[in-house]
Length: 238
Ligand SMILES: C[S@@+](CC[C@H](N)C(=O)[O-])C[C@H]1O[C@@H](n2cnc3c(N)ncnc32)[C@H](O)[C@@H]1O
Image 1: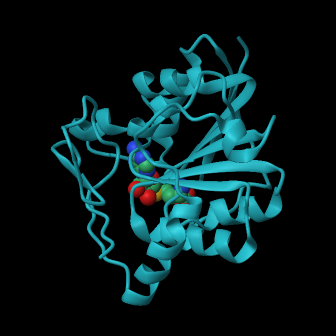
Image 2: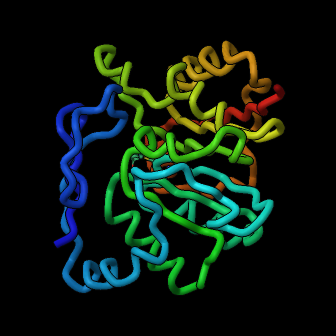
């Protein structure tokens, strides 16, 4: 049976593995959702081709995608609509998508399988657990589109855009690579600008909504509820 079973702080049971509590605050909400049997069967069959393990040795991305690939890390791709649209639109840009919830992972695996996408790989788990596998300077981009907002003050330490995380992400960006955050929570956008402006290796700020960024379910829901998205794009300059 395929289950997404994750915690916000205590022991993690991920695909049967039991891990020690993480040394950092989890940035996602636990959910437990089984795939319907037909989907689960396809997932079990196809996942090994597309999935990168969360834990393990440092990854040589040349071995995964071929030499000199431009690789973007898509953190928290949710249902996968945005990742799928970007993978179709930019076949020369490689994507490592990371998501803790199995249904979205299964959906992208379906699309990768159907389209024979050699430029897409997926990680099912917490990006903070996976980051040690990525070498410094190995990424050309990082996307964090509509991160979980954690609105209550006592939960805000869980926000993924926080100095301890963005520092690790910038380590893995090559000089000239970009970090792109989009959120429709105005106060989160403001906080993110503060965090990213304070990172001396980055330069950038708020940009007009890029027309190439796909509109996802989360963005549509926000627009319907009267929220407008803010896009922040920062480049690693040193
Ligand atoms: C609000 S959704 C947005 C999904 C998608 N980016 C979009 O725009 O439709 C945020 C997603 O980030 C995922 N997420 C949050 N923290 C994560 C982490 N540390 N590692 C991997 N995924 C994470 C959540 O599971 C959730 O699916």
